[in-house]
Image (cartoon, rainbow, N blue to C red; front, side, top):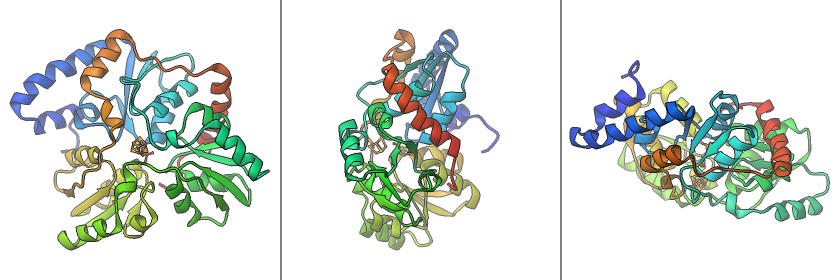
Length: 324
Ligand code: 13P
Ligand code: SF4
């Protein structure tokens, strides 16, 4: 299966009658990308027809930030949620950054405001603020450094502080706290997708599917993570599957991840519980085509906020990818 292109992988699993509809849409997007000098970046939670069909680059939040900053393309179409497109714009202010649907938000980003961060700084004087990238540009601008689930521990420890304010994901913050001596001040933001998984549910996968390897995203509640064999970012989970090739696996995260990875590893049995991210699912092929046709929706970040937010994102990129 390896050695064939992502598009070929998609064609092999798509029924002929569906491919007849899908292929012209993919070709239209290819043509528009060439005409616009555009590149499509897609998060691992995008559906297979986007992930395998039209994306030039795919990855977790950190990879999208890193690769968005490196690309030479004039136009970036960010197939993910709004904070990801904002991060791309913050890092590439002269590029046109498009998101196919402006409604693609995030429950974590919505859980905290810039004013909340200022209040926390007053309450914990001197404690640096580490902010998960799943936040607005305004919140990033109030922060010392950003992180993703792939590098959160390294970022926290890079500050050399005894106490750190960690925003806004409580469960990721607890997971970090378990791995460091740094005191972590938490905020009660949650991902509406990952908070729905429960520990009894994970135990039932093990009973129903003996020998299953359980991989979980650190946005899941602590009792779910305690049941997992491996905890990591979306890219960390994909890498783990590629390295260890389990016979059966469950990825305790958004539905489309397993669909995308299963296409690459047909020999592995994927058990697929489905918790959908309604925000990620706002992005569709027809909206991507429209975004390229109309050059909309342009993501803009006010210059002064972008400059402060860029410093926080850049500090994270300087730390790089951690152990996951
Ligand atoms: P990562 O891809 O960085 O693991 O993030 C998961 C997520 O929920 C993004 O919204
Ligand atoms: Fe936000 Fe969760 Fe959706 Fe990711 S999966 S965009 S963290 S709501």
